[in-house]
Length: 474
Image (tube, rainbow, N blue to C red; front, side, top):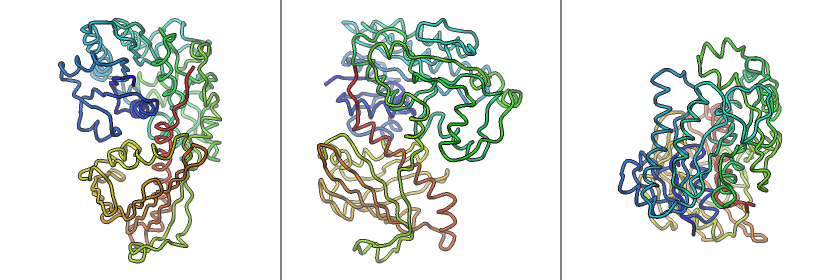
């Protein structure tokens, strides 16, 4: 079993990568600045230790086959003040240098060191067609990437892979959710004219690409992690709006973006037209090569909602009458036994829950059975609350039911069904629920709750698919 150490595992990309690594059969260790928080966000079976512990870091690096460095504060969304720039540099360069120092203490060279960077390294290049070997550009983002990459190149590894990420599109983080929100508000028009190029990548292709880099000895040097078909920003805005059957109305002129973000506006008003030449030449196959295919997958409704009817026999449902039913369906390329085992561990629940909910188990049994209770904390619309669920039914390999004993809903009865077919697992979620607030619950469901549940179950579907649908890589 290959052993992989990950730094930056609690971020949007890191959580997805950990699931993908487990799905590909890797033993995963994580170095985290906040180990307790990391354990609450990552799946069972991941060994987490404190990145500040030099001895633990050295021991982990000695015992690993690959190191993946994803550490770094988000560069977007805030003004680049002097203090902010210093923090961005430190979170990338200093962390990378610390890893490199630890790698140098090994008795033999590390097989592979994969270190993240970004296509911001190219600077604003207009419509120039760029690839992995194109020269870096000017500006703070390019300077930051150069310093980050230079620190990584010092690693005593047989292969050093610099992974320059494009704009990552996925559920539960990254660029997609803010862009979808703006489109729904009819504010997702072109930025500063919209002619600047956007080089993007679907999160699942990014994870598959990183696995490809770890597993293939031919992958060495700088690689662009972007889909093969970049688009102008105006086309991105139009395609996102079309994917949710809306029209884009209000563009944002360049001066307005600069007024809000200052120098950081260059991240939105500049662009790079990047082709992943080396990944394509190495035989890597993108599951989502075009923007249309990526958005078709990412904005697909993963749950149906209807008024509750034909309820199953349950004392809980007789006592707490639900008003609505949610039905979701996921097909996984994995045997039923593996899938059910994953769901048998409460520790895995956080790994398939969006970070925005701040899901944290406070009390749970090691082995789930009928009548087991699980206590956890969540955050809904920024409001912390406690939830207790009881396992009402537990039939290994077939189904289980959890019902809310204490929490935000007036009724919540969730049945998980599993069926194996041709070596694959069909998983169904059926939730009968009633919102709080009595007569106002119908309004709350229409305006807030249903959309929130769509996001949660959409994220859940993507996370489970990453865990159980790891693709073979060339």
